[in-house]
Image 1 (cartoon, rainbow, N blue to C red):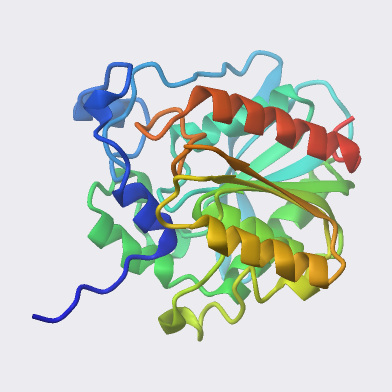
Image 2: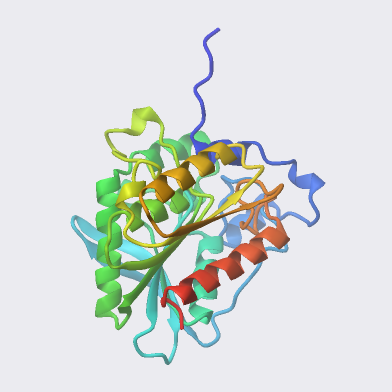
Length: 299
């Protein structure tokens, strides 16, 4: 019998999480979770997921002109603040669902013009409605890095046209979006700081034509200080890979910080999933705020 192909690191981490029923908290029925705007591809959705209102914010959907069309984005910004700093929110593989929108609003409450671009839009499929990981993966894995980086550049240009202060540009993201943080920090010299939550660090060889350099390979090219937040129990991103990244960044003389949370699995910040670990999630969020303040993205 032939061996099963190894899962990509972000999916490997999701696939080995504990049974959600063994975690504290109730879970929504599939119909309720879908109605609330969450994705079901990541498993059952916690009924006590964090909800952030839009009081004091302008929060909405918009369209951003990209090279071959218009890309949907979700944004949140302080309602009456001129020239807010800009923070890009790089989503997981599950689309711009309610968790990503809520994180965007949380950043808006911190004073940022936060924008979550839906850069998988060209496939014409709503990723938030897909419930099956095998159906989802070919869609997201077909996204070339060159197109991804161009889409993010277009988002930054749009933010500037809307009054955002792109001289205070940050990026943060989760899972595959955490990889995007490392990639964009190696691409755009105008990024002031990035924060990667459990972003994958080693790309599968089969993706080389679409993803020329993994985050570890990009270490010498980093143009912004990046904070990496990882879980010790992440079965898709072993601590040994994180250590390899640290060594590569140190050898290249780059500014960075890595924090590994003992016992935390992949997705420990995802408050809608069974992987959520409140202590690690809250500390990581505070670490992110401090990082963005240190590098003058947030006031």
